[in-house]
Length: 377
Ligand SMILES: C[S@@+](CC[C@H](N)C(=O)[O-])C[C@H]1O[C@@H](n2cnc3c(N)ncnc32)[C@H](O)[C@@H]1O
Image: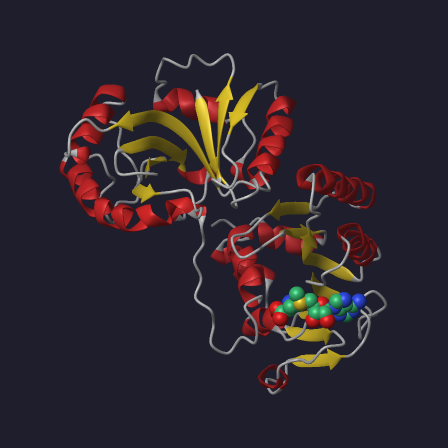
């Protein structure tokens, strides 16, 4: 059995190191393969018969013992390989359907993605993928292999047709509640016109990835207070005031005038490492200061442990080399400190599409906010 993961181009070795580390926790061993900058890693699991195509049920059972997609920092998508197909004819749709009927007859899918791993080389296949989606989807629908639109009892698996060239295709499946719901594992966002910087998309994506809509509504309520360290020109502050949060924006730089005019932003030209909240504490601490990651992590912990903040969202800049190793030590230190000081806490970390050489982290330590997090989707 082979697993397929997408990641940011250039991060393949980091993702593989993470996979080896996290799979070994449950005694899963194997080997990974990737080409540098391909944005894709294939991981062959030992002790799983490679020639036997497992049933979807078997895959689901196996998946329960693997690290969850949400636990993988560098993975943009988590897939199970069905087959690599070298097309023999021009009728690619027919060949894909023939394979599916042979390998997993009557299996229906919640949806189908025709996609590629996002790298420089693959840009030329984008147009083909876009065109190929319609005939493949139509053919799957005709055979009742796709959950009909509007049907609430959706299949628990998604079909992925992955292309590098039009002559070959890799068929894979993802488990709907343990994978990215975005084609290519990429959350595409439109730059909001009133936001003063593209950085705003980092916080918007983080909120969408880490929380469901219901959770967001419960976690960000009118009148809550936040501190934004390294706020300028104000992209993150913009996301917070959009959610009716009062923001103390801290930075020596210049904050966008339109944010100040909302009446929800108080600007403080101070050092983020020394700043103290105006009312002693806040609901949310956010931080996008480009600083040494361990220094930022320590600062976040200081606020959380002393109850100056109930929750935090922050970015950690990644080092140039051994990124997984360095970051996993920092994250383990964070978790150790949290476990010492809190009976219960929520922690998640991910490299987002809008992150470059950084990762985004969310931590919630406050009991009320943890309850809000328990809201169903
Ligand atoms: C990547 S930018 C933040 C962008 C911002 N999140 C946005 O969405 O517009 C980093 C900011 O951190 C600020 N910064 C760096 N070190 C700081 C410090 N010690 N105290 C306050 N601000 C700091 C910089 O001035 C810079 O404006």
